[in-house]
Each structure stands twice: as structure tokens, then as C-alpha cells.
Length: 213
Image (cartoon, rainbow, N blue to C red):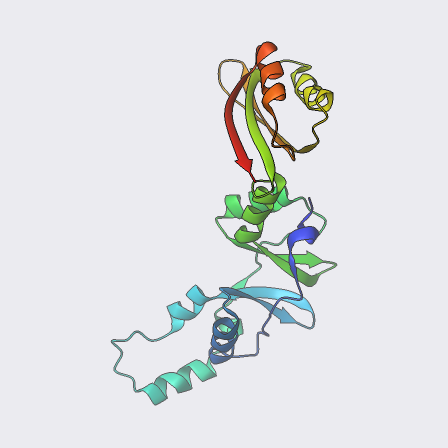
């Protein structure tokens, strides 16, 4: 799956010439944490709630409310934004976006194409995609099968489902220990008794089963 399939297109943005109250209003009204900073269609930075908090006077300040409001209204986004943010292409895989977030300890990526901002993708989008890819919420049966880590084992498992006329909707493979792998199979069938019995006869072990009705 690609970033363009899960990103938010036409995100809320702010210009570097706008002020902190402008950013606060957008963030509050739309319940977001970060704003791409865009100038002439080009991404020039990112500003977050945290950036605003850092430059805002503390509650212990001797300044009056009017003075605080004046100072914030004079502070341009260009002076507090994070410049040269990490970005991702809309044609990148979701795995690439996840690695960029993990390696850079961030939860948000502006999506840029031809030097222009075309969207944003967040860690929440990645989590939703992970759940979707594994079909965790879909009706049917989800089995985790422990198999020998050897050529042909995945083919044997998938052909077993075909043998019993059960449609496979999702597949994932995880390396385990001691020469074993865990194959996660999602099927839209709830009647999997014969499949389970056949898999057991092949020397494999079903270590977990979840059914959504």
C-alpha cells in the first residue's frame, strides 16, 4: 500500500508570515497537533502545539494578558517553526513512511511531490493501515499457524484453504524461534474445522484463532 492511499489530502496549513494566534485558532478549531508551513505552495516548515507552548509566556509571568496577547500577535510562524522537516513521497510505501517516523522519532510526515505539499500522513494512519492489512475487524476467521521455516510451507498452507473452498483475504508471515515461522491467515469463512484438522495432519500447529461474526 502506498502513502497516497492513506494520506490526508489538502491538509490545513499556515504561512510563515502568519502569527501564533493564527496557528492556535487553526489547531484548536480542527483538533490537530501540527501544521505544515507553506509559502507559494512550497513546504518551508512545520509548527506544532509544542513549538507554540515553548515560546508562550508561562502562567507565572508578570506580564498582563494584554501584553501576552500583543507579544504572541507579533510573533511570526517563521520564527518558531521547525525548518527542513522530514518528508515522504506520495508514491512511497507505507513501510517507508513508518521507518522514517520511527528513525526520526516523529509521528507526522508532510507528503511532498515536485516540491509541493500534497498531503500529510500520521502515525495514526499507519496504525489504521496495519489493522486493515491484517483484516482484524473484518468478519471471518483469523488463524496464526506455526510452521517449519522451509520452502513450500506457505504454499501448502494457502493451498489447504483452496482445497476446502475457503477464500483467503489476508496473509502475513513472522519469523519465530528455533527454525519456525508464524503464518497469519485471514479467511471470510467461519466454518474452519476441516481446515484446522487437515493443517494439524500436516504437522503444523494452530497457536491462535480469532473469529469475528
